[in-house]
Amino acid sequence: MALDSIRHNGAENSTGSRFRRPQFLTGSLLIYAALVFWAFISLFPIYWTMTTSFKTAVNVTQGHLIPFVDFTPDWKGWRSLGLSPDTIFLASTVRDEFMRRFANSVIASAGASFLAVVIGSLAAYGLSRFSYKFLWLRNKDISFFFLSQLILPPVVLAMPFLVLYKHLMLLDTLTGLILVYTLMVLPIVIWIMRDQFDTIPVELEQAALVDGCSIWGAFMRIVLPIALPGMVAAFILSVILCWNEYFFAALLTSSNAKTLPVMVASQTGSQGINWWSMAAIATAAIMPLVLVGIFLERFIVKGLTAGAVK
Image (cartoon, one colour):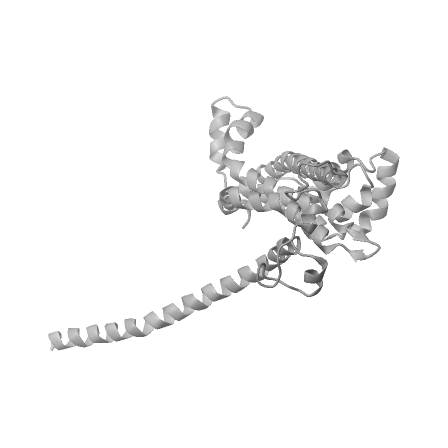
C-alpha cells in the first residue's frame, strides 16, 4: 500500500509539473513580449529622429521610415550643420554656432549639477542626521516641501525671474542659467541623497567621532565615500534634466548663453520647419546622453539600488 501511494503521488506531481511548465512559459513569453513592445515604443522616437536627419523633404513628408528600403539616406540634414563628410573640414558658421550651443549646454548642465549635488548633499545629510523644528514643520515636512517645488509650473516663475535677472544683470549669461538650473534640480538631489544617507549606519560616524574625527571629518572621510554611488546617480540625473531643459533657456537667454534645445526649436524658416536640420541637431544633442546611459549605466543602477530611491 505504501509503495502504491508513493507511486500515485509521484504520478500526480509529474502531471502537475507538466501542466505548470506550459503556464510558466506562457507567462514568461507574455512578459518578454510586453517588454519588447514597450522598448519599441520608447526607442521609436529616437529612431525616427536619427533617420529623419538623413532624409530629404520628400521622404519626410511621405513618412518613409526604413533606410535603403523606403528611401535612400542623404546627408542633407548634417550638411546644413556643416557636419557631413564633405563639409566637416570646411569653414561653417552654422557648425561654429552649434559648437557654441553645445559648449553652453555642457557648462550649464555640468555646473548646475555639480552645485546642486554639493548643496543638496549637505542639506540631505542634515535632514538625515539631525532633527529640525520650524513651527509645525519637522524633517519629513521639510523634505516634502523641497520635493513639492517640482509641482510648481515653471511658467508662473517667468515674470519674477525676468525682473530679478534684469536687475542682477544675469540675463543671457551662463551664470544665470546655472543658478536657475541648480534650483530646478536641487529638490531631486536632496530627496535622493537623503534616502542614501538614511541607509548608512549612524554607528560608523559615532565610531569615527570616538577616534577623534569631527562631524565634518566623519562626513568627509566616512559618509561621503559610502554615499558616492548615490551622488554619481544624482549628478547624472541632474545633468540629463538640465541638458533637456528648454523653458528657462529660451526665456532667460537670447544669443550668448543659448543652449542646444533652443537651437533645435529655432530651425524654422520662410518655407516652414527644416525637419532634416532639426533632426540632425536633435540627434547630435541626444548622443551625449545616449553615451552616458551606455557607459555609466552601472553607476546609475548602483546608486539608485543602494537606497537612493525607494
